[in-house]
Length: 293
Image 1: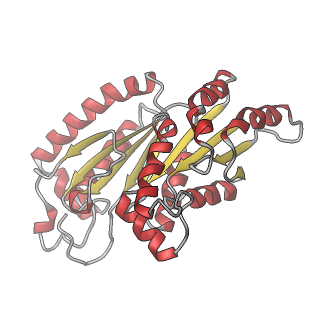
Image 2: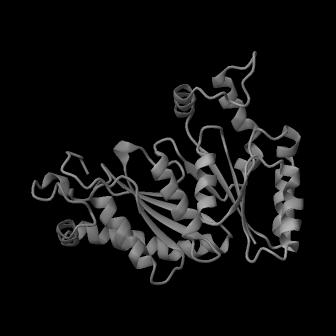
Image 3: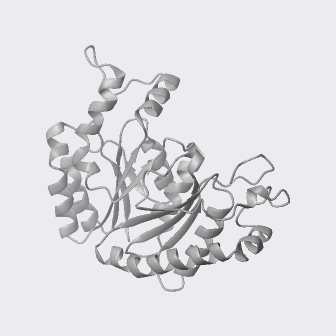
């Protein structure tokens, strides 16, 4: 049995997450009262009709506050029964959530005659703090559209090939913001920039001309060696501490050339000795637009 608990503030993408899981053979329940988690697990374990069942439930601020406060003990009880359980927490910054509610004109579940939308969004985070503190995987959806969020959920939750820590090596561009869910960040903006080579500007770090150019740079080779040596030593120790998900972000200016090349090379090298290594390029744009990478 595998159980995925989806939580997060309203407007952060919980419905999308459940849709993705349902499309991938999970039995999904929205707005489950937290106190029913043990009974759900018990009935599923006793079922003779479900072989290797996958279940996803959404638990959020629509629950009674006293039930949310008991979430840590409920989760501990599930794991004591050796149930594979992932807690996925989705969130976005306050301005993004305000904009989403304004555009959809949906009513926030915590708003009332005395609580404004902004106050409800703030209070919701406090109510969900017992779940936030225990989240195995946190995804910031502020800059993600529907399709990008679906892709991230598939990569992080569904492409995890086996139990253990799932390591994500992610390239990004500082000018589009630092990934707030990153556990370790490497800044490689000091390396030679292919953007300033007119004949290389239109390519990305996955293309052979960029691979050849950066592969010839002594500073790039030295940076690769230092980052790889650090991660090869310490990632197994992250895994030994029972972390379910670890994100390593590698950033350059625009997230097109240097960070993409480095993240891909680092990820490919780590895969030779470490299982569950995933690679994602957050900001890659294959076009001729002028992106300072």
